[in-house]
Image 1 (cartoon, rainbow, N blue to C red):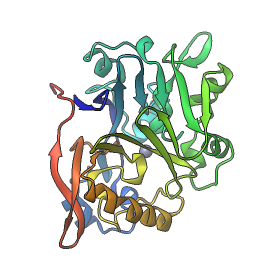
Image 2 (cartoon, rainbow, N blue to C red):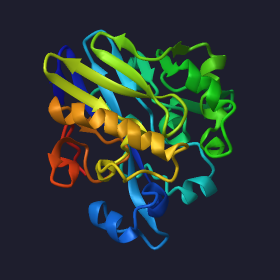
Image 3 (spheres, rainbow, N blue to C red):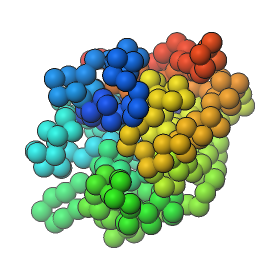
Image 4 (cartoon, rainbow, N blue to C red):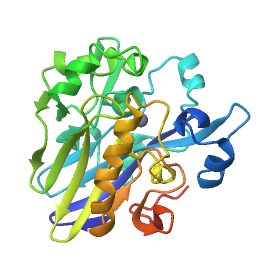
Length: 287
Ligand SMILES: [Zn+2]
């Protein structure tokens, strides 16, 4: 746990999965991304995490993103290598003394299945919000887009993972750059998908940044290391160029949502451009 202002900040491991390494690194040759991330498996997949944030200030218990769904078909789970053997959101929360009912807000960066999948559970009565006492926060523009996405990322939106939030009237839509809670700022970016929101927690000279899929792993810090999944790769590049000088200058702690090798790091200016500084462990896990 680290403290930023009134908030205790933890990283919640919600499960593991795997995606094609080539798709994760776009135009970067395998020889390079294998060196800066890790070796691919026999299906060319690289290990991926889905790390939520947990922010607590004594009144609110805020979860940022929810990882993959345990309710996908076996076939889909095997395509994406989705596994909850090592980590699950319940076990990670329980380790911090939190149950799903304690969560007051779920801040969703965007509605791709690997970010919203944990938000909804299913039983004989249908689909309903997993965090029963929580409001769910998403950008209006993104929520609209998710229901009518481009062919490029349409397959990443699974309506049954987020429409139940609307049906149960627990969705709060926000517009643009907003201080959603005291010291917690969201901001829209457009390269990965339309109006994804980044999350920044700031107090005094201390800032923690959760860029979601703008920089999914620490290996995506170099400007040219972008994902083939991005709707607008050039926009991602420009958005990174906009954020990185501030991240470096103000020594922000960056949490990498999909990085299976590290939780967080600061970024420094190297000879070849922005690069990772030492890894930071925010929340200790036994395994
Ligand atoms: Zn993602």
